[in-house]
Image (cartoon, rainbow, N blue to C red):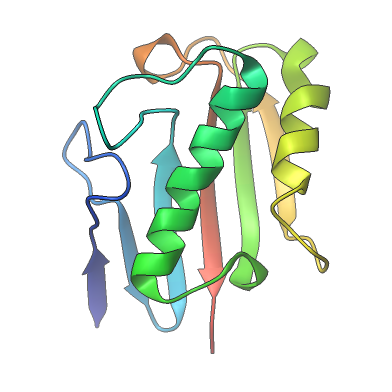
Length: 126
């Protein structure tokens, strides 16, 4: 059985998908970009602030699903340019206390709405 997770505290999907789904204790969250859910605008004033907005959006999905950052087991970070890695990594790392999840980081040709960073997560609470 799967449970669909939706919250107004994270950006609404911009396509035919859900914000997140829980199945068998796993939370699969769609990739998050720096859309501020309060006004629907992109928050891309700096790569640091863009990454913080992405992480706040992830947090909103975790809270709605009753999960926490400590439950994240896997992340994928998509960057518009690997030159952004250090700043994104610093912000990303500040949201975890210990037991970091598995992760890959890849540079891609383009991301939705021309953003610089998108992050998807898988969490588990058994």
